[in-house]
Length: 215
Length: 215
DNA sequence: TTTACTTTGTTTAATTCTTGACAAACTGAA
DNA sequence: TTCAGTTTGTCAAGAATTAAACAAAGTAAA
Image 1 (cartoon, rainbow over the protein chains, first blue to last red):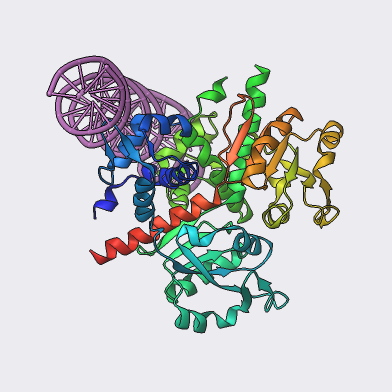
Image 2 (tube, chains in turn red, blue, yellow, green):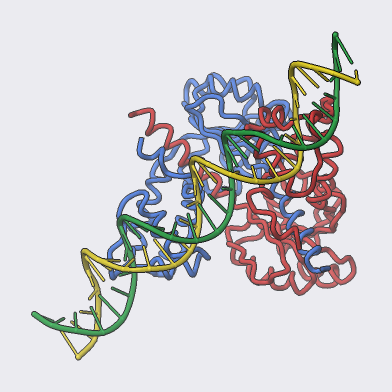
């Protein structure tokens, strides 16, 4: 219940904190102050202290924060101490690349299955996974109980697939389709990636530099 | 100069407006009111009107907005009326998938080259592009003047590569590495994608559902 | 132990972002 | 042409977010 009161702005910063703390730990840092972390991350020290305080008092006056303790705490808040079973829908170029590129185990997930509708892809290997026919989806889910899904299918296929998947017990969607996945079901988590929007934003940024330069 | 005063929140919404307006146009819409658009996009009508007003008066009282005019205007603001030459650095799984999956021409870019350091990848085809050796980067840039770059290389390689690329005249980076690209040069645009952070955010969302359900 | 310094947690202030309200301007039917 | 209805652009209120300030609590060296 208290978790509900954490603002979205804070949540979006948590993965980045977690990442920086991991790097600090690897570089042998034992402790860090909000001031030093703020310099490394390009934030204000005040914001960092206030963000951490949403979840409890992790620091100590005159000392700062213990790097590995803090990282562990944030990891727990993010749910990274679990291994949620996840499946991939769509084993085309993007799906394959995501499956190969992402370190799922360090992000709280375990990729246990991949599905496609294209006969040519079915049976092929993606890392340790074999691509299955979408026809096997229901039986696979009944047996293996995946909780999260990656959507790398065409936009047209996404909408009805999502309903099927929710029926199969999927509670979290990592959505790479151009389809704006709406969270109609209140107990489903959605993360829309929208690479196209990201590139469009870069275009704006580039355009804006050039405009200001010409002034 | 006036462009500088547009808030980041507004800018981040622009690509989504553009996308929705495109869909509306495809579905035969000629005009749309802020109220109707707000219902489709899950925003408030007031926000939409204020966002559009940052760039001029595109609407008309009693009528609403002309869909294709508005889309065209937003496209111009986003710089989508150009074709900025772009190169890909890193032709591994992710780089290949991005190159194949993204519709560059509709996002204001033209992918004209791909580079890798791995001998096994050099010479291979990605769509219509041939993967070149990173050794050819300087001469290629001198000749073809790319302005934007996609970074799909390992984190360790990213930092020095960025400096090289800036030296070659690159002004915009679409960064898929785990390296947090800092915008030290004021006239360089950066868009960090951070797929790992996105998945971590999903983990938080999933974890949060489950917590609230158990309450 | 003392003392100067550091740093947190928290309160208060400032800033930014979002929403509500409404006059002015237009549409379209009678 | 008139008039009821619609919708924008804009201003002002309300929320949310971020930054500044500072007492309290610690560190560490003398």
